[in-house]
Length: 366
Ligand code: ADP
Ligand code: MG
Image (cartoon, rainbow, N blue to C red; front, top):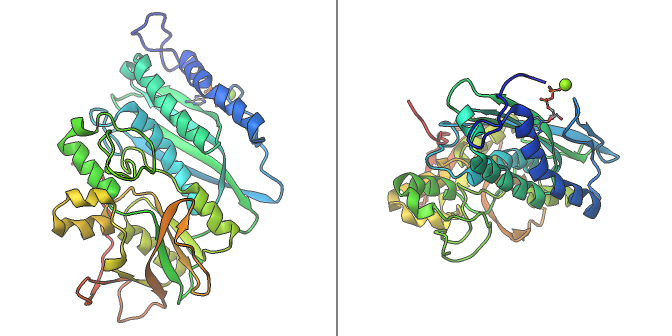
C-alpha cells in the first residue's frame, strides 16, 4: 500500500488511492468474470486485490510480456483526445505487440500516475476505464492488476503491461526472415497520421468519433470508412495468431513507429535488406485528405498504424484477407550488400532510391 492520492468524501475532491482502485475494479470485474465463464479463459487464477496476480499459462505455451508507456503530451493530449481514446490507445499499443508475435493475451496490468485534478474527475476516469474495458472484453483479456499513484506533475502517465502466451518455440519474431521472402502488410497505411493531422486542425470534426473498427464508406461520426486508425486503432491479434497457427509468416513486427522505421528494425534483426514497391502500398482512405505530394510520405513514415508487417516464403499461399482484413504484398527481402541501403524504394516511375527510416514522432513539444 502506498500513501499517494488523498482520501476523499466529496464529489469533486480527488478519489483516494483505494477508492480509485475500487472504481477500476468494479468497472472491469463483471465482464472479466463473464469472460472467464463464457470462454473458459482461466489463465488468471487471482486478479486485482492481492499483492500479486497469479496466472497459469496454457500447457505447452510460453509466456510473452510487453510494456508500453502512454505519456500525456508525448503520446496523447488531454485537450485533443477524449478519455475513451486514451484508454483504448493505451491498451491497443500493448495488444499490438502481442499480435506481432502471434501471441494470445492472458492478462493486462495498468499502472496509472494521475494528477489530483484527474483523480477528482469521476466522469473522465469512468470514460477512460469503460473504453479500456470494452477493448479488453473484445480481445478477452482481463485486467489483473496494476499500480496507482498521484502524479507529481500535472501530467497523466499510464503504463500498460500485457502478458500473453504462444506455443513453445513458435512465437513470431523480427529476426527470422530469409532472403527471397515476400514482404506483406495488413490493412492500410498512413491513416493514423492523417487522422492525427485532422484532429489537430479541426478537433470538433472528430468529437463524435466511435471506436468501431471496420466500417466501409463514410460514416456519420466523421470517419471515412475503415474506422478511426489514430483515435481507435485495431490491434491485429487474430491475424498474428492465424499467421502463427497456419505457419505462414517467417518473421513479423507491428508498425508502431512508421513503415520505414519498423521495416528497418526487421531488416536489422534479420540481417537482410528490403525492396518495397511504392505503387503497391495500401493507402488508408484518410490519406486522400492530404496534399497528393504527402500521401506516399505519410504511408512510409507516419506512425501508429498498428498494422502487422510480415515476411513469408514465396512457396506459402498467403490469402488476400485474414480475419476480414486485407493482406497486401509490398516487397521482397534480400541478402545485404555493399551497394544497397537497408531499404530500397521502387518509385511510381520505376526508378530505385534509397529509403531512410524516418518514422514520425508524434506530439513533439520542443
Ligand atoms: P501493493 O501496495 O501491495 O503494491 P496496491 O495497494 O498498490 O498493492 O494495489 C492493490 C491491488 O490493486 C493490487 O492487486 C493491484 O494489482 C491492484 N491495482 C492497483 N492499481 C491498479 C490499477 N491502476 N489497475 C488495476 N489494478 C490495480
Ligand atoms: Mg503489497
